Length: 272
Image 1 (cartoon, rainbow, N blue to C red):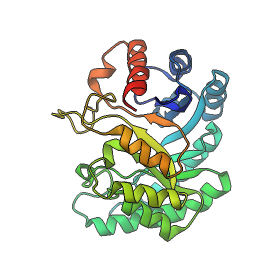
Image 2: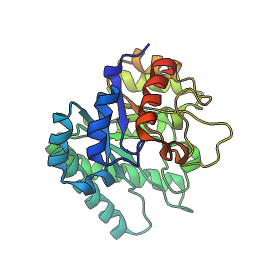
Image 3: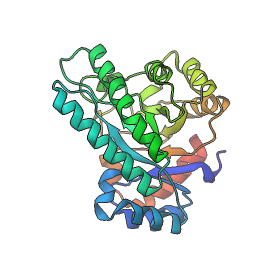
Image 4: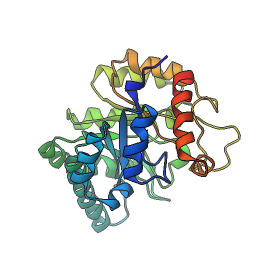
């Protein structure tokens, strides 16, 4: 059974809650870590938010999200790089050691071109990340998102970018929802661990049937992902960080969020 000290929850998982409510309810439910989504920072400035979360007993695990580097026009790509630098500033002020990158894609643009633009974009912001001591975690997304959300769809592709850019501040956020299907997953997790690339581990479940490709994720144990096996691979690769619950679910958002947090904790104990 996993220990609750490893459990973190994303603010997007409990979307109806304000950041202040998350600071109150997460620790009460036994959750030890929090990953903050940028929209939650509209309530307060990042430095104040970080201080309040730590005073509540929560460890700030990461900030979501940066990325979305590809674009047809050079001016748009420069704007994305500028926005990512600002996001790094927010992560540093928040006290988040990691910024998660959803890398982006352009419908109709060759994936190879989008991947090169992603690599170039990350290379452009790495010096700013290094100056602020903020790690960048590439999150491979399921291929169903390859058209417009991310041209990085496997752990292997993320590992390749990490190899190419060769920075201790560049790594990977492995999300079971996006990578569980990959027949090469165990090998690629092992490779990432051997090279120090495993920065984050996200958990939820894949429902069958899935009624919406973005907002119908399942609570752990509700679907078909072998989370325990993937967790064993991640830990065998040396990962010792938080297990971050990231669930986008219209069904769960419509429930009492206190009861939802209790369900998250119970599912984590039983299925992770």
